[in-house]
Length: 413
Ligand SMILES: Cc1ncc(COP(=O)(O)O)c(C=O)c1O
Image (cartoon, rainbow, N blue to C red; front, side):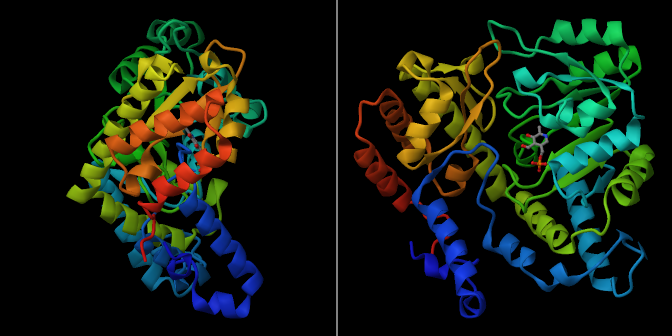
């Protein structure tokens, strides 16, 4: 692939600021010539990138369509209404707020809408795959709320549902959060709803990871069950970096006020326009086929990694996400990630439930966007295991990665 034809490399930037243009080209080259297995990443479309790089980036638009604090919002109002309508229709939600700058901002807004400082919240503990916003002491959530962590079963890696109910009964939380950065299985939203109802808690689904699968019909939707759904738009959903919130009409005003003016200022209209583009793309049969292929690929990858000797958490996956312990191959997650990075295989470390050392977290969203399928997953698993074990030479592995990704350019010229 010729990186000079990429959408990011507008000639104008190369002419005016060659130093920065070089950096952008370098990053595009990195993304195109290495293997992207970071579970939270994807390649958004040239149309999404076009909206991000549009004149809407110039516009200040505090408030909501029809009620802005700035003049000249008539066109961005149309863009935001379109994004909201598309999100509502895509997810079958009564209300959507598309202004959250990120997934973390969406979670912050959900808490602001439903909770007061000091309230008790039940969420998946960080050692089991909870996000920073689910009660980390390093994050506002752990500072401002009283988080009670639930975990996963030590044997199966599956959420300990009985523990969720027991802790809910004992602590009577104001809210229960379900969602994770690393849980590879579908979440039983109906069960969480039942427990929340039993103890009079709100249910907040942090669907940052699976929301794209939900859009494509490849994962169950939290919308019918959760009071508020928080999500990102940049993972499997393949939109711009950002967040969103979905809820019923009765909470709409509280959620909107929690975003603006409570936790954010001016909406980023170029990003909102790009979200509208992504929602439009996600409503197509092609996206549904993509979402199902993402899961099919992840299942093959998980099985192939297990065949290679890695211990795959929960024994497999229902989603785009696979987490695995490379210890049987002789190294921990950190060492494995370093070896893989040298070979051009890009992925993350993650916590492994009930383990001292870190494991590996991989996702199939980006490689599936590139057009890779089951055959390539088997090749990736063999390559990964060889590198981690140290049984293949790093230079050979790097060439193998180049050869593989060379057939699947993310932005074909
Ligand atoms: C479950 C969950 N919540 C929240 C977030 C935060 O999203 P962001 O990085 O956009 O703030 C993430 C990001 O990976 C996530 O996985």
